[in-house]
Amino acid sequence: MKRLVQAIWPDGQYEDWRLYCFADEASAQAFLDHFPGVVFDPKRDRENGKAHGVWRRTGKYKRILDLGPLSVPEILRN
Image (cartoon, rainbow, N blue to C red; front, side, top):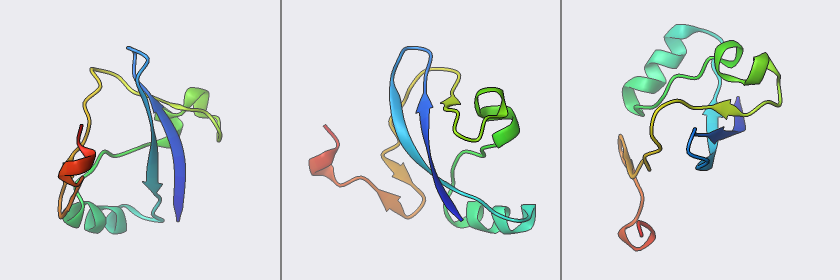
């Protein structure tokens, strides 16, 4: 299943992220082996576990330009 979530960093930067949800950890791990990413735990990462809460990220915002076999085209990088 695919869901969308808004990720917000402490400096105010935000992005809409696409989440891929899996029924079990083995399926999620198989996906991560092909498409490296960030693990999202809805109970921990959503605001107070709310279904429609935003993802409060920690640390400094950094654009992801390359992710496994996927990459942002040069023309869209700046």
